[in-house]
Length: 200
Image (cartoon, rainbow, N blue to C red):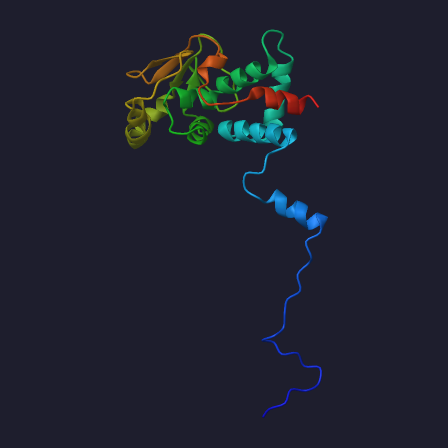
């Protein structure tokens, strides 16, 4: 029978010691439990992150739009913020069904494929105004695959264009009829939580 040297622990019987569940351990465990209620700050932060993700903005960009919204004389700050985000050129292109996503809309703009009032614009954050005409640049006419597979394919979809915009499918262009209102945004957003977060 083989003997083990003195002090040699049998690995089959060796137990891994676990930290006893104290108050700190209990708190960590509770924080990981599914369905745990968010704090008020957590709700505010989550709402901001949701809207940032929706419009594809970095924190610095988002704060800039909030600063503009808070200094707008008319209307509530939260509603003004959403109206500004909707008026971004990349979002407008997306709403006009000229791109499948806002990310794609940004790429189209950056590559110089979009004109506002006949002038080529390369900034996705450019804000459109009432009576602005948004169209595709002349060089896009040669990109038949892009027009057929992206623009025309989406234009034919039964996706409703918001009432603040007017779409001319045949000419592949749109016009801003008015500034977007809160009721134009169908996605459930609690903008007051964002205002409360930045107001601290």
